[in-house]
Image 1 (tube, rainbow, N blue to C red):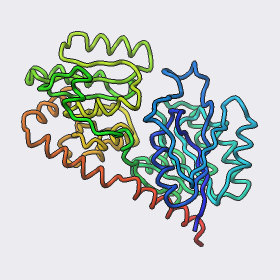
Image 2: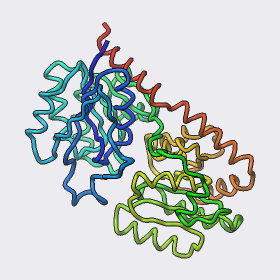
Image 3: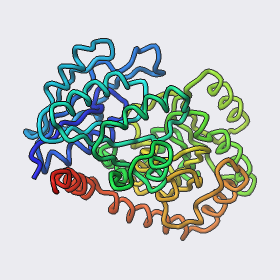
Image 4: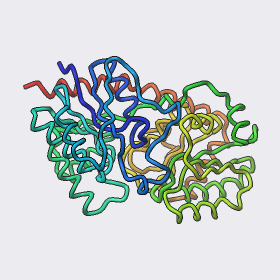
Length: 382
């Protein structure tokens, strides 16, 4: 039985994949001892829009006598990478892989841990990167030579891992992302949330939330909204997120300018304010054009038990039980029809909310951590 694991990922104040690692470390710490290798500096700040750190009180690392956080890794200090590898404790070293920019750091730590006899587990968040290139594929392929076991979030991810990197199916486990309930740190009514954000009480609010990048299809969402609003005048557009380029900022600004019924914040949203946007929304839309994994933002929506409309990209359809709420990626007219349908039948919104509540229970971190520990133990069976 595995008693201790060393994890490498991100925890607050680093952004990265910290929402995932917060819940993973918290629930694993209820079962085994955890040493978490965190970054004190993850990238050069000028390379990352909106800073790499957040110091919001709602965004904090889990605290437990069984969890030790070591915020020592720095992109500019190879000695911190070597020290982390030499100091990895427990029977298993488990690292997260989500960007090839961290290859020198993660590969160094993982290689040293492997040479010290640790079993190596890798959670792959993006098998095929959103902006993949030759260097990404080369470094990712090299990174994937080390693990004894891989964790991916969807069956499609497993197929990609087998096809792109020739990973044996027997070494891949599909374990979904869990629900990010810590953003719902206190109860807020829909009316209070709308007052805070300036959204009319009787509006039918449709939300897009999160970083705005080309593959996420926010332009399609805005076009679809304008089509649907012709049938449902009370529709209200809500967009909250930072565009990742000046080109996207200008494009989104131009698209939303003619819309009067809107709340658009093209900036990073602090963790303690996230709950207001989700509580204020009637429905959340994930209009991604290209995607291969599960969506952390979808799992936040499920935590708030919000109805979801999603494209058919990647693992997004797994976030809804009613497959009528899945539309063809890159097709604004199809999305507009879904938005109109949702608000034409009051019972449908209620049914979708019940579905989200069921999926919230299905994707609990407690069950995910139990499955992860079973995976660790299985590494030591003949």
